[in-house]
Image 1 (cartoon, helix red, strand yellow):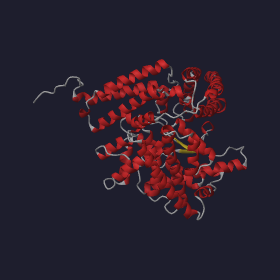
Image 2 (cartoon, rainbow, N blue to C red; image 1 turned 60 degrees about the vertical axis):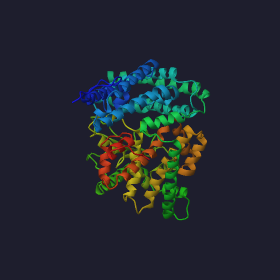
Image 3 (spheres, one colour; image 1 turned 120 degrees about the vertical axis):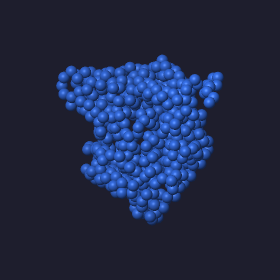
Image 4 (cartoon, rainbow, N blue to C red; image 1 turned 90 degrees about the vertical axis):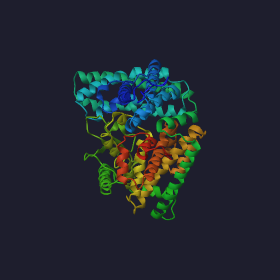
Length: 558
């Protein structure tokens, strides 16, 4: 046998050592990721990172860039031919994650262009909403976190550019005002249960300093950044394509994506017209949606009805064998806590490493002091059909079922490194899949609710591409949400504004379309349940990578 020889310039790593080297690099990458982003680690359930915040200073970001470059260099030296399919999958996930973070640090530079980049690491609600340890220990970690607020916000003022996009400044002002209210009202109320003593006194001092820092930062947004704000927010075509290539393994022309988006919009528009005509003949779609919104539970029954709907959905998923539900544990259906009432309804799942089993499905009722008119306007967002569609997306078989599968994914890399398009695409895909599987087949209200959400996501898809690469204005994007997604002007404007700082919100539709095509391409080879279970067993990789694993080769994901 001719001995194995390494050509000049190639890796000197023996093939039999490649899997071991990959495993070492994976552990090294995750450890460095958690050290760099400790609030992410804590949210995953790794509470040894409690009380820590990221370092946003320029030197720290430069060090992270250098470390990522070194990691990518060593990763690419591992010979792909020496890896099993399982290891090759993880190799790709690691490479994309490292290159994406490097692109964000060196090219997009979000910490310099958007005040919202600092709001996530300042979110301390996790210490009080989930009982993963004794309250006194959680409040001590919370206090340490609070002590770092002044430094984080002072760093933000030195890092942020002088001219920030106006939608970013306006949204950040609203967000930080909400954070301030939380620290003035809700957080002390939650932490006070620790009782009088040194722990409470230390919390009070740290929270008072955090409140003062938040007020100073808000004044900075209003007095310094707002007057100089610019209308320019687009990241441009090159960055947009990089976002899709590294984040989602999607590397097709934007013209092709726009054509696909328009096709799905037209398809869903035709279907909602048909469903609305069966529900209210001769009435425009917008009026049919408006009438349907009046069919909602009373305020005092909202949480109970949401819980009932979840049991109905769970039973349907199981009876029709749509996907395995790998736990009998239900999410707790509760009123949204005061500090999180920016959303109508949302799933708050525990991280994959969380010791506390609680996951919460939050539903936000009207506030007690509202007028009857305000209460009714709020409740129109909870008509029975929409409660079902949101329950599908958030719980059964959407995010919560996905989370239950993630708990059992055997490789840590796959539990941590996830794709936006897979996570949101799966939940959005489930809405349509349930209707296709017969849920609500004889009830046009269910179909109207599902299709209204699909149209909203279709318009997000189109305006994201066009606002960031084709010069579409915020006003034009708002009109598209009004005309094509049947939103009222205010929520339409808010949806358009979100697209300025979250260009990735095209991923709801992008992920749905890729998952649906993968399912259709595998039809006849796997049952629907087998397809879903196999897909979710991979974690949440870019959908084209999941396609490679399930199809056995690369093929067009769209």
